Length: 169
Image 1: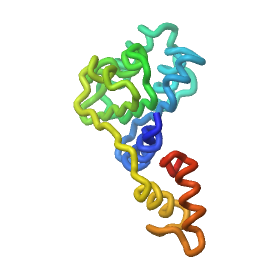
Image 2: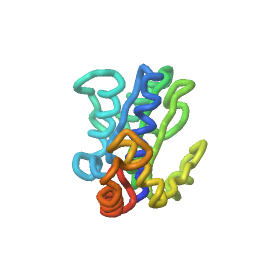
Image 3: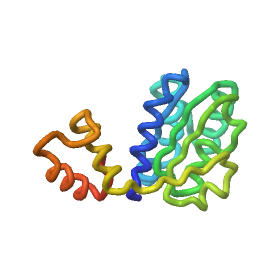
């Protein structure tokens, strides 16, 4: 980790989610799967998009069939944060044709090889911010300006350094 993939995913979601009637942000898929399993993940997706509290998913294959059936004609936005196993991807978004035209599936992962095993359209590697960029981003959020307010430069630099160059962490 360390380059702000989750922060970037949240920012993208916040920017574009209003353009989609059907949407889901699946946070920390790796942790959710290890704690609750793939069916729970599928239920979260279905619940987010269909606004239903409980789905009738009994197995991963059943979940896949439900996802295909419910979403193949819907334009959806799905963000899957922190995927670390192929089975997670296959349980939620195994193929383009599971979702309607204009859908967007955005995946964050540390493992680029995972993305190469499935048909992704584009891979965008994130670059770490340099110190000046991190300070500027922090300043926009903390002060509403490009630069720290007077008297706060040194403290702001310490905060950015403490966050490992990820000022929104």
